[in-house]
Amino acid sequence: MNFDFSDEQKLLREQARKFLSEHCTAKTARRVFESAEPYDRQLWKSVAEMGWLGTAIPENYAGLGLGPLELCVIAEEMGRALAPLPFCSTVCLFGDAILLAGTEAQKQKYLPKLARGDLIGTLARSEGPGAMTPKSIRVTFRSGKLSGRKIAVVDAMAAEFAIVLARSSDEPGERGLSLAIVDLKTAGVVRRAEDCIDPSRKHAEIAFEDASAEPLGEPGQGWSLTRAVLDRAAVLTAFEQIGGADVSLALATEYAKTRYAFARPIGSYQAIKHKLADMYLNNELARSNAYYGAWALSVHARELPLAAAAARVSATQAFDYAAKEMIQIYGGIGFTWEADCHLYYKRSRELALSLGAQRSWKERLVSQLEASNT
Image (tube, rainbow, N blue to C red; front, side, top):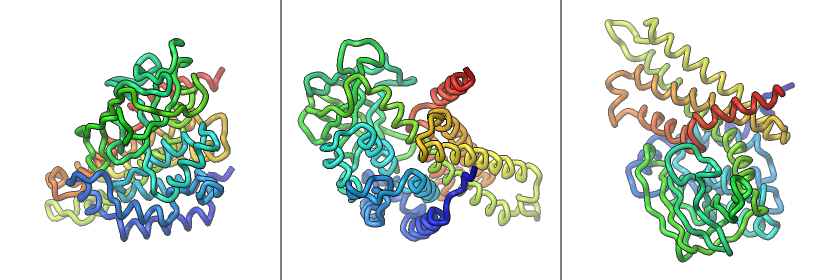
């Protein structure tokens, strides 16, 4: 079985890397990081013109009609460039949810706008600290009205629409949950920016008070649909994390070659060599798991929940380790605002929590392994 990308997909990677290296540098991320702007609007427009937002959207909805593998390639390059864009929230969360559960009318309404870059969306799930469970969902969706509060909604200040996981009936557990699409500019919706570790990916709290919304998917299927969307997003986010981890390793390696201590490059010291070797091994392990996840996603394999959890856990660990060790290798300068190390560390922390905490994904990995062995 060949898990490698095709020549066409590798060409897409080269083109994406070239474009982002010219139009999205660390200065781009810093500019959004230090400003009140939720994302880089010009870069978003350019990315839309390149067709990347519609990569996996069928052609009859104004997309390119390619697939998830091409989306994985683009996500990795986004991670390498630290792109300050609502790409994952719009394409991997909002867009995928519409593709999975939307009616034909909803697909015609939202997907062409998304592909053109005219729509930014997100997914609102969490309502408090700790792991998200069916019991923790208290936002209600009754008679077409949403009421309640969601926290830490990624890119919520930039989004026009949100898909909300809410309780739609008195049925206990998962059976009482459904998804709803809400226009964030409608009456009864209030957004408040929240402090976050990576201001180039801004988060917000959203409060609903009898806000008008439309259902997405069948009633009572909200939890299963959310899990399916998160599994798919976990694979794509894993590629984004690998992109960041690879650049962290490259920057650390280059610095170790040029930084001298006691008349020797610090890379010649065994302790530094061990750090770099461990970073490389973690990155390659994460890449292997991500490739397995990409295969499962592309063929709709029943192993997708297992592959997604494995990709999520290993990529999160790899990026976290690479970003932290890069700072250690840079030494004192690595902790300063002038160095770019902190940008990668902050992005690694943001991505580690964007789809749920590591502990939740480890538990999901264990449960999927147990299920596969029964």
